[in-house]
Image (tube, rainbow, N blue to C red; front, top):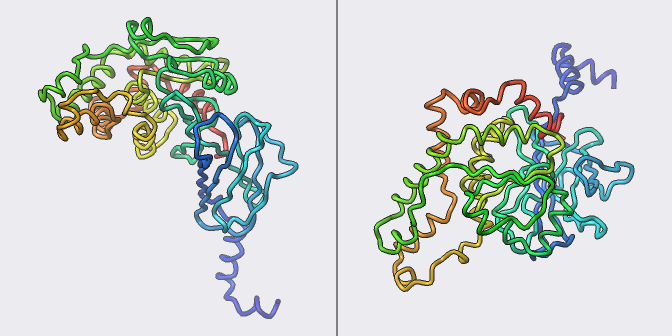
Length: 366
């Protein structure tokens, strides 16, 4: 061995030894996918995938818990090679919801869970955990959810909301909708923040009469969210004050479909936590995979026979990337950055923002 070391030039040997001893923490990305294949509120199969940059050899221990805040790391659920890249897991049938902690080479840990929860009648219910900010810190699981209105929750869904221990519901719907279709879930705190928006324009009637095309719908949605941003600083400030109180968690933010007003609020929250725009847009567009738009399609001969009408109606019901991008760019242009908007209009001071990060980010990318 000594003879081999003598063959290395001293500077190169020093570099190699220093690099080995000071290897930086790898960039770790983990995804937990539900592979149950049904919508029942019951434990089932998951596929957990991971990727490390730079690649690392060794093993990963996977632990399971019904709480994202506490894991018994004495005995792993399973141990596999890091190079495998994934593992199929059958959840513990005694757990109401499974969270998983992955520990790579007994050194680097990441917590994961399924993002989309298995609700029966609630559209668009999901966890805002698992996103990464500019410092590679991960948003916490099981703290903040987003959803469509809880009005249509089934008995099974209500039971699952209780299992999740949802303590606070923030409802962005106007008063007329809340009175007509009240929230069924009896949370400790129900906070009504009826975001002011443009007057209803009965888009469906205008689409069916061909007065509105796809681009008209996009412009109308952009105008509406622009109006919401310009006229609801007080409500958004109250939203963040609620998020800054530790005893309010877990929290779910809702509106009718959980895509536009809730999507805008989620975008502002994730921005405050330092999450990049690509992930924010991805979260916004996820609504399109989770809302059953067939429930809102009119039973109309014109709709059934006219492809342009169908496309325009689908656009109206969808979360459109052009809309969110327009709003974020407009805020940036007007205030210099979304951070400046949060600080000046919503009173989210640097001190409050740090407190929010303490509440909603794992401290060391766990």
